Image 1 (cartoon, rainbow, N blue to C red):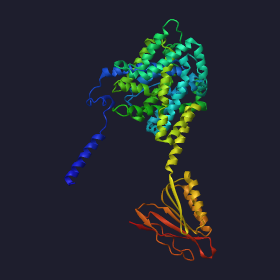
Image 2: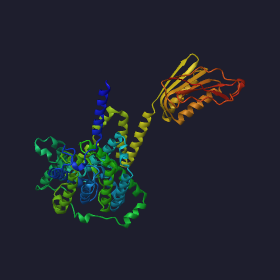
Image 3: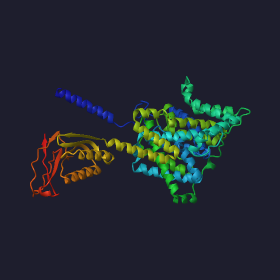
Image 4: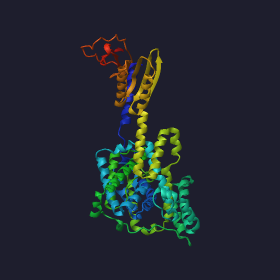
Length: 579
């Protein structure tokens, strides 16, 4: 290649790299839409998208509140805050925040244990912690979690959610814990078969689930209408028929439902269980929001999420929600995907959807009382199934069986205990799996003439210590007068394995065996050889041993018993490096 061609290609690469490294247009300039930088967003398109998000968010806000065991108005308040507060901050462009189904079980457990009044304090301080985490720039830290743990966490959230909502779908009350809910399903079916009104409510819930799965396959523009809205419309129509007596949503005054925490609630911060709940909400809400941000970023080609800023935005939303005594807020996949699919390009759509929620709840609360609870439960059962994602388990099994175990353990522990315990155990399992895979040690043993040889390569850590000890003991049991330990292929030798090798060497030399030990050195070259070492002198040399040079790949440490039966050992070093 000529110099001119080389320079031309280099210049081309430089220009291309400069173009690729140029900053993306801001969220307000509609980069995904392909509009010119600096052009104004399409306001009509943003308003339309915000209405679609509002129609999806309304039943979800109410349904999550009902599933959480709190008044429906608190779910709407959290949805309003998620739109007007979190949506206005320039963290993520298109993801939408509000009360999340993933936290419904945790909120219900917290309310049952500490009471509804303490929920505001817990959410408030969770929000403050989120702001602190964002300010110290720990937003991306939540991305350093195994995908298997994330999928296991979502499955562990989705499975109990489905079973818990099976009861309100039949106008019944759930027994309590996930295990109790699962165990009570046969009795629930028996009650449904003997109660005509429960049968009608259940059929409405089933119809909602079927619509949620099949509505996207409807031909024509009708499929752009959210399936949840269609299900709510059908449920309202059926509930209005003569002879139908299913439970409907009872929504009170939005402003009257605000519960500002008082001094008595703040005094509850002295309870260690409350502090634990605050930390739990902080970790789970932050992780869910930032996991959602990563997922939503893959749905569009617009500006990427600023994780630390988004974490601060989520914290601001939860701080205000806590002051008002509302539900915790996270980013929600269902609303965010609806926002992307509706063609939104800027933050305007997600901010406006909060305004529509507020206006609807204040001006038309009586309309909410027409919605059957079983329909909202059906919406949440569908959400739980999407979170559970059973198809991911065989997929993970085919891809990586170790990660499959981590994913399954995370799910089962969450179902059996609680979300925080399951995530922590899942993280621990993921760390153990990573450590085992990082500690891949290859050990080869063979005998040549009068020498028993052990050759090791890879990462020798304490996790592989049993294999190392077995190989050393096998070499000692061979009965050969010479043992050669070649560790030059070891990339990492931790303290446990090094100590074991050194102790073994000292013990065998003490018995009169000749042990040749080849250890990893401070530098790497292509090849190194060891020259034969002459017999050691009768007394230790006065001069210190010669250390290997800076280019040596390893050094040769040879100790032989001294004449006269002395147990002291003379050490001889000689290294020759081939360049």
